[in-house]
Length: 85
Image (cartoon, rainbow, N blue to C red; front, side, top):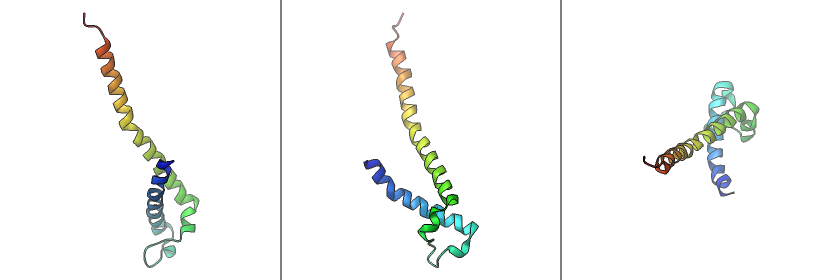
């Protein structure tokens, strides 16, 4: 639960950034003078697809350090457990 709560502000920042960049290319007239885009526009499928791709990539990349550490641990364990002839 705490992970999802801490990711909420990060997700909002990501959505705001992706949304602004998306509409700079696709429909600049929706961007306000202060650079913001109405939040309802950020829920459009084109924007959400990009956010989904980024979240999926971040999730996979977050697994890499643990996987590397686990594989190193397993390799070292095999070396240590082998009796010396």
